[in-house]
Image 1 (cartoon, rainbow, N blue to C red):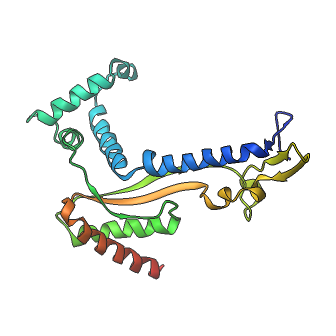
Image 2 (image 1 turned 60 degrees about the horizontal axis):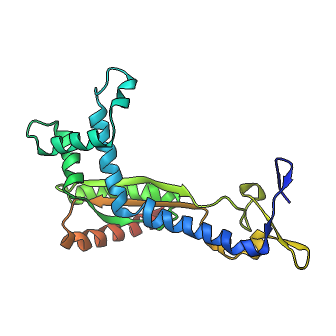
Image 3 (image 1 turned 120 degrees about the vertical axis):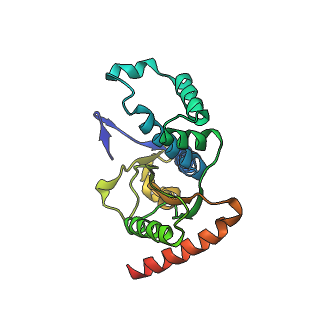
Length: 221
């Protein structure tokens, strides 16, 4: 039984399903909200716009306090419309405001492994050579921790183990034994995607080429 702050930590049997539901909710939030493919590409656009926008923006760091969501949106609208705007800022501003986003041409499962990153980087370079007139973006940073509980088969130091207390029988068991959810849900989330600036009706062609090449590269590892 683990202790924290001198207190023994345990879960009553009736609370196991609540804990499982929380972990499943976190998993779905990672896959369907935080790192949804379309939301993620707009995160990338915004990050790139802000990098260009911040360049020589302030004489000192306190200048950032003069900005808020409204001033940023106003600047973005100006950059999107003005013919005299910085071309980098204009590019990303138009992407965001006009909803002109890249589309996924390749993606891994929701628990990508390190070798899949090497495959994806190689694949992006191959796509650039195959389609030199298409702009490709690779996203290697869509990742997070779903839970930190101990799962059977791992080193015991790799996660928290909680006793489950049964108030009727007065006995205890372990969460890693009682819950099948924690055996199935990945502890960490990571998806790697490659986006291409391609029309919607051409996505299938690019995806078929990308996934066939990725399969080939995996076999060569």
